[in-house]
Length: 418
Ligand SMILES: *Cc1c(COP(=O)(O)O)cnc(C)c1O
Image (cartoon, rainbow, N blue to C red):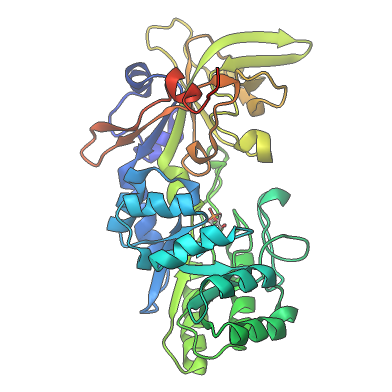
């Protein structure tokens, strides 16, 4: 049951059962080597000279990972003032941040403008607010050039019927507002959705570049994120063909810059691609039961720890780490269909539905793979459960605690008035 993490050398000699015993369960485990590798792959995606990677930090804002991303040469895409503070706490300079906003207050815009962070707004109404806050300033705009896609309707952020981006038909009004507030449009961006494979991504890039020609003198074009990762590696799913994407991207970028008459900067905004595969969530089986035909393994992996299966019906591969002293070895021969559920008081609380697995037992430690993106970042304290700890397997194979588990005091800390 260890084939995927073994193939990646994920634990680098550490035993996941021992990690869960030492740091507690559930536990987010990240691998530094894999994270750095993913950053490097994205940075060399295109050979265009002014090509950069804006890490969309909302996928995983652990400060240690942010610091590593910066060391690898990434800049950062942020979605809130809070994320700006996190990025700066990890060492990013305001000039290295692009604040892609959606429905924020004038105060939040003002916070970013005062620091000198470039803000990209995505509606005429927010452009008007930004014009008032940053009259005469340099700004960016997020467009929706009509292409969208993703792994679930909840993550599609382009095309018809999404709250994100300015539709191209509003460009005349955009130009009026730019003139009214004497704003200089230095960049445009888009983001079509999450977990997209190459073709749709490139189609989106083509559409954004067409739209970019309607603006003179841009300094950057940010082509968005959404690069897919294979969540079903146990069934042989293959990674993105970065070479194929890179060579088409190269052609699009070099051709555009030639016809635009300027070597502007091109950025991409991957979140998931950089962090998903560097994270495994460990949890423990505390009970097993059968209800009618359905078998359940009850764990400490409720949706307060990993929300993606409940929110998006997402698939995460599962590995089982059983005590070597157990007299029932993991045996593929007698696999059965089982639901892995959590400990929250909700029937939608599951981690894996109807999986073919060897019978699970109390005390088994489970590894939920590819949990490094939108995992801890979406964790909450529902049912007064502590958000888990996070550790890093460093390049020298040693482990380091990079966020401690919530204590009961943390959970009640903001309450007043007893
Ligand atoms: C979430 C987001 C991203 C990153 O998406 P991934 O699917 O994680 O790559 C990039 N850009 C914007 C504007 C986003 O909101």
